[in-house]
Image (cartoon, rainbow, N blue to C red; front, side, top):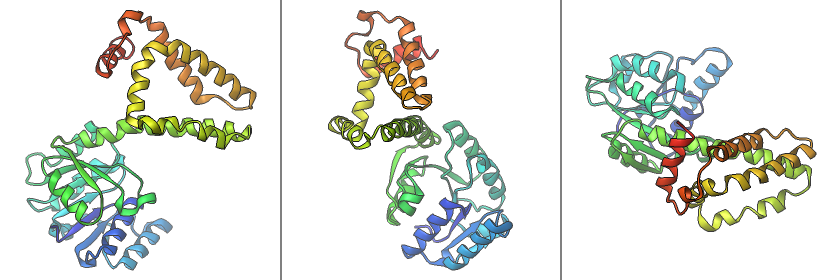
Length: 295
């Protein structure tokens, strides 16, 4: 499907993808990599050694060599995404598919895509919905853009689970970043909760007693919490205040729990009337929260 592939960036993501493609049987001659840190200090030397072990061509400069690529995958860093696209653009041949894998927001992704405006280079927005460290090159992908299906078909052909979101560049990245609001928040809450549980000798018991979420599924749980938040914010705030007392008794700073208390207090102070929030669906609840709290 793509006979020549260039990776921009050879950190954890780039090296993992390259290793996975080689293990999948993609010829070394079909893969090249550009990273401006090659041979720059110990890290650059390690990257150069790794590229050599994989047998792929490695360069520290954007040159005519990438003109042969049919697919260019950008896995630099979010802050370097526009610069990488700008440096690569003059060397790309018409019809090249430029896939940005970087963890950036929707507007930031569209800014990268704008580098190729009025050119024959086509852009696809690729959100990595997992960890390269945990899943290798098989970290799941969510893809948007006019050639999303083509990118999706290629990813699946090399054993990388992928699915198309839509044809709007920026939407895939936006979904990932919005998902991070939940996931990174849960990560921080999990650490706060389980360290406190560890201090009290109750880790297994706490984990056993959050299993009710499994019964309704995570997405349904999110919906239920959001809808019922309007009705039960005051009671739940009072409960989190007791949780904060517990953490303090355990000798811990209740950083995340205090933020939760403040969030609930904001809803309480909005003064929703009972008949205003009774039997709302998710869309109506979100509209009300947006209007009265997040304005």
